[in-house]
Length: 121
Image (cartoon, rainbow, N blue to C red):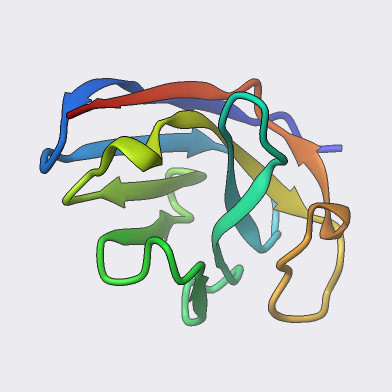
């Protein structure tokens, strides 16, 4: 398994922006998931090893951007136009499958500790 370390969460007003970072070494597709209280962990976005392919959940499309800098072993999640419904613990994850795109939790076998994002109205 891959060790993943996330950072960048916090409290933001609706309409604001936050950037999450995840440090992870290795040649993996990477993803971000989120889990709100009382809800299942859900897919947010994924990026291929090269960064050439990305996929987004409909709920964040056009507002969130995933990117990676392999020289720094870091994956980023830029979150703009935040909404209260984006409030959740955000997890980065490394994919264990070679097929693209990895969209389900079972496609990932290494997870970060999670970082809280809270958006106030």
